[in-house]
Length: 221
Image 1 (cartoon, helix red, strand yellow):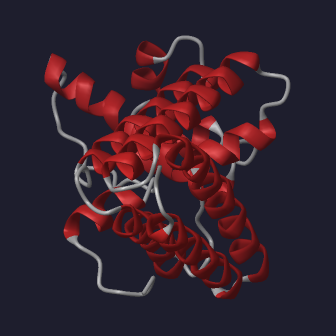
Image 2 (cartoon, rainbow, N blue to C red):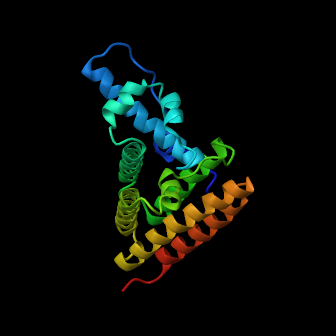
Image 3 (tube, one colour):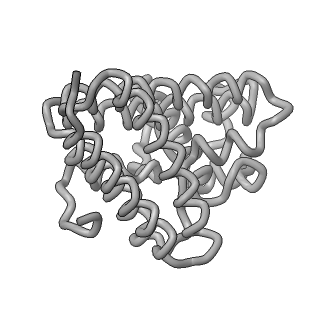
């Protein structure tokens, strides 16, 4: 079930390893905005692949094909400010992606969520994960980044709970399963990356699908 064919919506957002558009020429405001967007998107991609500590300003500039002056103009507070913006981008894009599933059955929402993570792993040969998790585990002494990561995770939990409730789960079960779905998926991605195999992710996904179907089948008061 998890390995079914993805829709274009799932592919476009499952990545958190966002594509970086080609730079434009010129110095117009539109060009400066484009450079800023490329820097944020390039940072999100690097965080998902390399983590926080290994994502240097030089690598961000290389990935985004942006000039150093654009970096300092758009992000005068440096790397921390860029990373915070990248987390916001990851949160926003995933929220937009989740919104497209409103009205689907809870097991379909679960399957799509899991499939999208699996697709990310398979396309990257188990080398890419979650940019938000990458920052969370490496930013213990940087409260603003931890606060931003916590806000993103809370937003995902809240929206998933709403989708699961709309898809047939009772409110209490929907909230609890949304938390479990995110926590288990993130952990399974970490295991798959460490072991360089999809096996731990697939095993976790099957357990989660079994559980959501049981919740759907259970009598509701």
